[in-house]
Length: 326
Image 1: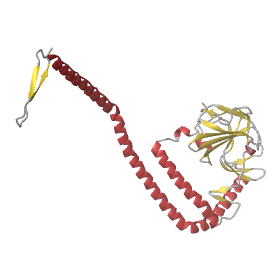
Image 2: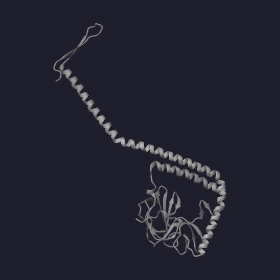
Image 3: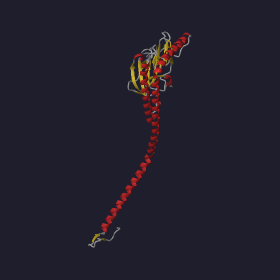
Image 4: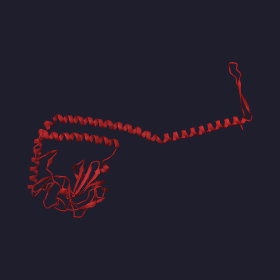
């Protein structure tokens, strides 16, 4: 025991009054000492644990704090880039609005002149015995949906009016603003379009019709072909060019039996004239998976695959997205 004797404490006031004394036994003093010691010990242990927890917390989250600071700086750079793009698009839109009427009237004559030159050149090449890049013999496997021949944004079957051109221009301005918003989202999330791009050829065969304006040799009829026609034997497997979700699996007009895949971030692909469909709407397919078999259904002159690639709803040349079959 620390205290072996009893002690008395005397309290004396300053004003001459009688003092008071307090007597503490050794047992009481030892109890107070033990209590104070235990309190100090517990306080020390708790303080040490708190310090260790704080030290470990700082070490664990320090990389996160640094990464947040880096991302904040990077985001500020992205915001400046987006602001700059917004100012550029605003200036371009103002310039287009100012020159719209002049450009529309000149475009009207230019579009028909270019189309007349194209028709004359195609006629001369056919008469001379040259097969153009997109002249289809009636006996060759080809087909798919057809629409009016367009030059840029203009339907060549009708005159181009400035009012109609203005009506076409306004949606393009909105589309630019929508694309700017898409760029902002892309920079914020650092997503990449590469993973969603269809990059494999659905099959390999003899190409009978290219992307773009094509002419049928016998009838002389021209139409805008939105995909590739690849002639292969009936029943040849068709492979998915990339991962995606099936949004259509069944009959669709001139396509016949058609499968449509949505690959995300704007990319879709279509596969027409199938003899057999091996997927259903809502299925998620992987790259290289067989989705159907080649046939000649719909508007078709023989077994072939009509293959389309679309970006944000607009057809693009599938030849730029052909790789290999997994």
